[in-house]
Image (cartoon, rainbow, N blue to C red; front, side, top):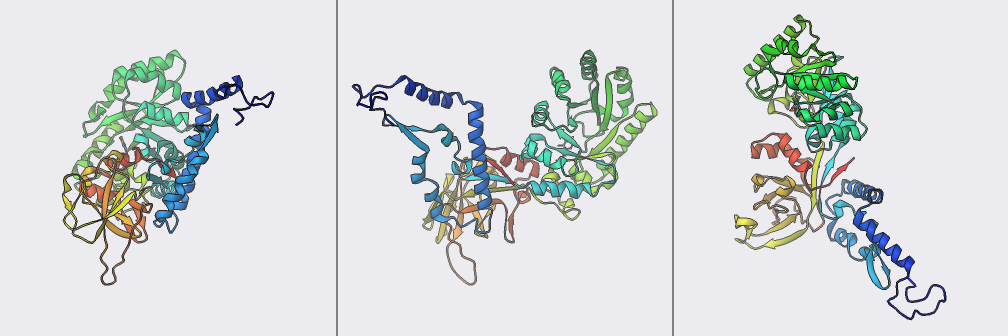
Length: 483
Ligand SMILES: *Cc1c(COP(=O)(O)O)cnc(C)c1O
């Protein structure tokens, strides 16, 4: 810049520290933008960062994804950072837009990849098993089980789903604000104070209390619109809903209201994913009784639905008018019984790059507690992912990762932000030997060649269901990348 010369005379300034009014304004504008986080400005930069993320992601999901090596690290940082700054008056100042545009996967080397084609595949796979006319509800609560509610909802709606299910009013509003216009059901009764939001955003609640039904109807009536809802029926899970033998009195109590519109009647199974089936059959019988009683009393139950993923896959006779597909939309088997019944493709992959490596001499320990002791001839590699990212501490020393197509053992306690794995450096027989380097990509969930590390394997170790694992990893600090 010409800060040491007078802009009019071209002569050296008398006062070298002098800042012209124009210069001061330009500087303060940059500072103000930086501080105020001007949304349009930040959005443009973030959009560029997302594009860059996606570019890096598609490059890294190629065949040689695991072999970036040392070169990757040097090319990604170092001299390049200088181009992110510009100087005024000899002092260094960063260009905030360029700082913003540094992709998240270059800020920390761990990320979640979401394959929307897998979601498409799973939705059509389930849809093809439904009788014609049976609807598919895509359940996208908890940010699409960690896969991103908006992206997954749009994908599912393009692949045969007609309805969306969420847990909260805010989850429904997020979809509406992303211009998703399909019917949305909140799967539980929200607080009464949220009624204006339901009407304003055209979101349907599940209802089971007369107070809520009447308030909702009156609020709708006051502005001259309908109050559509689904009636939740408790058939045995004892979580929410009107008891199956009390649905007729309930509807008689609230049904007089002209604005109320019973659009659907549903229940939820407690044991659809359990080996034992008797309780399941009892719930089904109670539900059919409730629906028949409504009809006999002159109430049209609307869309009748009961099945979650497990029930939709295992029991075709409870599909009724709609099935509510959650976990299997994302490609996970709700229970071992489902493995042989349907083909699903998991939509989530979790990856990280190695941030450090070392040869640990025999008997030295690794990680908190030093519970793991080196047997010698091992390379210990560190990844920037831990229980703060949903990689549960209970998995410590009990899971494998994939590195260069080979299975490697996670060792030592998983830390909050990092964890380690072991690579056997001995060469014997025909064993495939790998020598991972800093920057190499490691698969935490996903497949490399014939080898796979799965959500289901983590569930086995943790004694939990895939829902909890994908939500923990997907809704974490890690960026989500889509393809
Ligand atoms: C979450 C939920 C579902 C989806 O269950 P999955 O096991 O994920 O398929 C269906 N119905 C209700 C009421 C739910 O709360």
